[in-house]
Length: 282
Image (cartoon, rainbow, N blue to C red; front, side, top):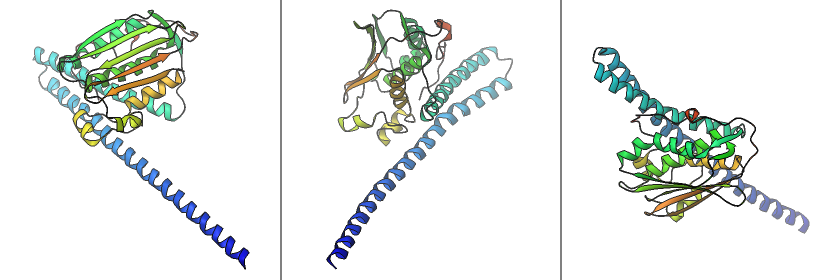
């Protein structure tokens, strides 16, 4: 009789543990669905807004083909909106490849200085809107072997974020150097809103914006930093972040030198480079 009571007690304890586990799993599933639904809602706006603008601008161009000056202005705006849309879509594609385990490094010789200078030029219009200056301290060797496209996506997202969260009239500092092991170090520092300590553990979570107020003020869909974190890992690098709330944030990337398997990409092959754009990023 005692054995039966003991077994019943053990079964009850196991059932209680299973119920607690099921509750935890259900809570995680619900949170995951909530985050994905939130992401879909955000990304719909991030895509719909430039698409609506493009359609309206193209309609204006078609309606007034003889107004050369206005047509030229509208064409530049169309290009800017397409640039913003292309940035969003590339991030979505990168996130999908990472999620599917299909993102692999393709190593080639990279002109690091040219890559950074071209990206800074591409984002110059956004920085100008907030009266933000770039301070470039590019001390690393110009030539470095890694994945050009992935490094470009990493830098584009970090520069975009730095601009987005910088205070008006501040600056963004980008510094590069090589260490004694020929590793490439890239520091990107802004002097903006920073990140509260309670949120530091969530910044690389996919689909997550830190809070509703931040999302509403700054926009975005919660992919950028998760992509940066994943791509740095794919390149066998490390990503370090330091932030002080309302004072700014610094990201440091460390990448190992890899054996090149391809040819050096030229400056005009940089994916995000363009001129005279006025569109918003994120």
